[in-house]
Image (cartoon, rainbow, N blue to C red; front, top):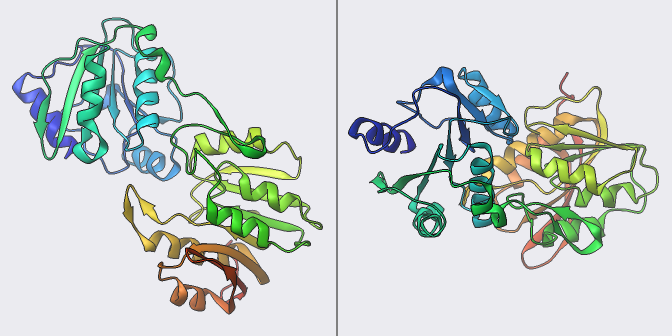
Length: 333
């Protein structure tokens, strides 16, 4: 869909790229198409590890953050409004005045609302509507025009810091809070927090007796940066990685997790299933998993396949807490 809009805009002359200079593309999905863009001049800016790696494997130059100035920038609009605004502001900050800023998104991403808001701040050209979305562009008006859209850290109860776009940025996730309260007073020496986010569960793990190291494995570079600020304990080790693919040096004794189950706004239980299978592969033969999950998610078969012992240890109407132990397969090497 994105590729259709970009190629159509270029073919019809509705969009004219600068003849030279680098073009930044913010927030591209790993399988997004960019027909018509000069690949050798494109620089992908993507901090979500699976998409970052997919783009790199396709031959793109990829960085976690923007680096220097660009002749033009493309923002692939996310659904979260605060994150979308922050990306636009970041792009404008890295494109000199008069350089081209392009915004592309689906209607379900809120592109119509973003178009209206940008028109109030910049000289937006005629939008291109195609494939259930829109693409529009404007010359960069300078940093000041979007300064109030820049990402500002949010401070939550307990002194936690988050940023727009990370999971549960506005408050502690209720499921994670249930799991943190249910963790036993004593935990094993080596623990992994898969999908660690901004560090809420890891801080609870480090408050338990017996813990010597916690491995925070998180795919979002922005969330992991928050975790580094939220956890200053030297026992914490931070890994920017896709938890499903990542391998630690040696097995851990326990895994704690609140696994993701959304791709965009769509529920995707297969993602949680992959986390369950991965959790077993992180641990030795006597390892233990503590996990929270929404009650409607079909995880029972995956848990039974990955662990010999599975029990529900609590929860509420929305969530269930699960303890699983003795993985059925040896840890990955």
